[in-house]
Image (cartoon, rainbow over all chains, first blue to last red; front, side, top):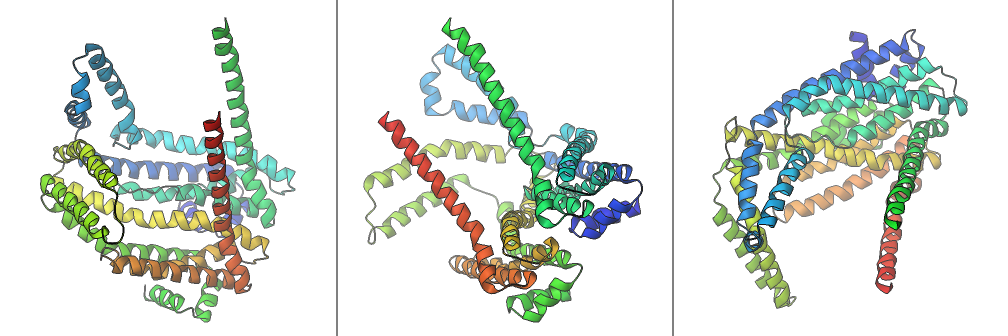
Length: 239
Length: 250
């Protein structure tokens, strides 16, 4: 456990040594998985504390909803239209529907959701790690990489450590933002460069190719969905 | 801590030896990041105190709104001698302000709603959260731009490793200690500008030292990403304008 924490801490600062140590160790995949689970659970537990504190300093969402509704009903445009019963009914329906979506979108604290992350976050990190690890390994081998699949998975598991920045969410209202994604990308670059003994250009290509492949797949399915939609709905209206 | 402050001071004075010693260290990124975070937090302390004290004061929404309206009136009056503000524009701003009033009232009523913990705890925690978010915001900007600079530097033959380049360019944050005076009207803005220019100069120096190339290449590596972004924005904007014109024509 102590070794894993040391490896994770050093990997965060983009030094090649921890990635080389992982590459050369005998049980890369179980160690990688252990790091992901530890990071995921730690971040989720700390996030639960932050979410609870945020909930405790935020008014009840039902009270907020009532205040917003009353405020809207006091506005001139509402008063002009409220004599129409159909408008009142539709307004209430849309307001209630919007209220189910918007608080979550705007980051209203949800302790239940935060508690669920203790299971979901390590799971999500592990799935992304496996998918990225396998795909990037294929590209790395195509580019002349020398590492095995286990080594690629072990090294890319260390690239999950920027998630540790989310430990700051112990304090409510802290916004960590996009820095985790960028830092993860840099860690993946160092992981692949070290694991496959690449020069910088090939390491960069191997790091980015899975993202490019994902973009192509998403675009393909979006186009396919568009064409199918046009065929189904366009054909229906033509008749 | 003392060593870190010394590094920051030497970076501010562009001392070659300090930059070279810093690049050669194995913990270059750790030290660079520590300085960046320390400077950002120190620079934000005054704003934190001002915001917490302000947040703990009882608020009078009517008085606040009147103050904003008076400020607007004063602004338009002071503008008259230099730039005659069209009456329509002034009326439009006043009407917009009036239209926003119900929304402001809703916000004030929400702020008055009870919370499980006492209100002052919420004020302190929300301001502390904003304060602790400052380093992340600076890190995001520095890293997001830095990866493109690194790419250009590599293409120009730069020899720095990723941690050397990031660890050294993080020194650009040192002059931003001047941001501590940001809440002071006028002076804060000017000092912010000084810190930005000074920070860019340190960034260029750091790039040159870590990559072992000349200042010309360092300036090029620093500017190219910005120029590419500018170019892409111009292309996008032109495309939008052409699209709008075409739609109008159709």
